[in-house]
Amino acid sequence: MFWTADRIYSQGIDQAQERIYEFFLDAVRHKSPEEVLADFKSLFLNFGGRDNLEITEALDQIVTAYNEKEFFYTLKRCCYILINNWTVSNNRACIILLIDIFNDSLIYKNTKSAKLKTIRIWLQVFIKSEDFQSLQLFTMHLEGHNNHDQNWENRFVSYLLAYQYTNPTSPLEQRQAASLLAQKMKDKFKLDLAMYTARVGTQSSLRSHQPNPTSLSNNVINLVTLMLTKKSVLNCKKLAVDFLGNTKYLSYQEFKISLLKYLDFSITDAEISKTVQTKLHDGLLELKSNLNEYPASTTLMLKAAKYLISEITISDRGQPTELFNILLHHTNPINLVLLLLKLLLLNESIRPYLELRVASIIKYYSSYSEYKCKSVISFIDMLNIALAIYAGDTRYNIVRMTSNDDPYELSSLQDVTKSDSSISAFDTREYRIFSQVQ
Image 1 (cartoon, rainbow, N blue to C red):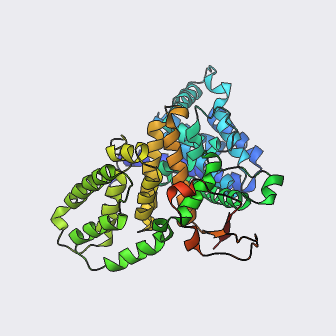
Image 2 (spheres, rainbow, N blue to C red):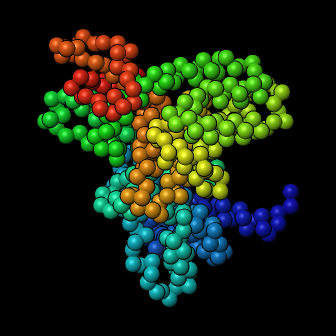
């Protein structure tokens, strides 16, 4: 093996970075958060290790090489090493303090040291980057943002984190931290929803207020009722299992035709229903048509499902599709939610792809006020509820109380299957929702 100057240089940078990572890994495990934050600030803002000259020398090697890209990567990975560990230990207040370091006026202070000046200029660039915006996501759900009209998207951080935990080029610590936080937020929503629905209509709800975890006002209970009682929804999981069993030995073309039937576009407006069916039918049958005669492998099934998700949400160019606008603005958004839910129930591995598409929708509309995005926000809230009910580990049951209000004498679910208009007038005195962790 011949060692070129570039290879030796690259190896030197790698070794310097590893020394810095190991230092902060050891520090976050054995030091107090206050000491760790002081070490971080000392190294990256003052270019000096408080008690360890070795990491200062390691950072000096990166700065001397004048390698801005590697400096950013080192800084970012150190942040996620700390964030990841503090998320696991539920020490989230320290995450806010870490991000607050980037608000320090020292970053903009002049200095006679050429190397320190370089570092501070790089920090100023970093603060304006998308990488720093990604870091800020780890504090948005913790801080009490009062200006909801401008920051409504902060309520859906669990989706925005998908950009990080699905990106294979992101540092491992960043992917782990993003995935962990997103799951914690999903679990919290499930718990909040279960607690809210369990208390609506009970005497305890009069004594203690349980916050509604959505923006759907009190109508959230009507929505949950609709999703639990509507016949086409009740059997969502069973329909998915049956569909997969019945299409196991079909060709890809036959599978795609069966997939469209499985989705069942039974929207009230016949014209809209026909438009949706036609657009998806033509595009799906054309998808990988050269493989139509081959068996419908799992890979091909996933391609079909992902194609349909993109067609009814947002394109690769970042623009909401025509079908998304139709389903969102000209029908009840629950129709769109049910299509996505049916696709997701075919294979759980589709979920990251779906979450990325929803994240792209949030990003597209984030420049608009909450008032202008009411329908989009309602759609995401509905999707969250659907995922909590059908793709989560909490089982929801709706029961009709008998005329003598005996909570132990329950009627059949068939008795509460009503039309959409009846469900919208849901009477919490007559029905109760029970949630149970499976």
